[in-house]
Length: 75
Image 1: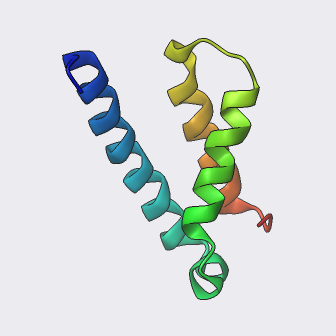
Image 2 (image 1 turned 120 degrees about the horizontal axis):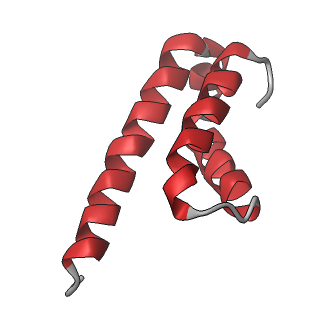
Image 3 (image 1 turned 45 degrees about the vertical axis):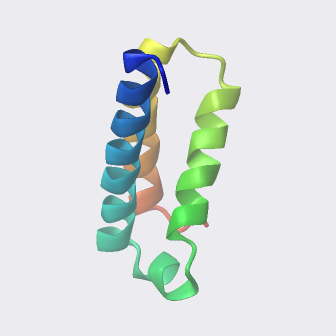
């Protein structure tokens, strides 16, 4: 945690995670009921990481994937 960039990335990641979880909570009561919101966001992050896209593009992919998860019935 000596690097300011690392701290900013962690803080930003927590903020984004909360945003994604809140979106799923709002639109996917089935995931809330089954306690799968956090696991679904973890899986989404893993999926995005496996795409081998530049870090500068990951946020956009996360947003699109979250919207897709919010409107689908995928768990």
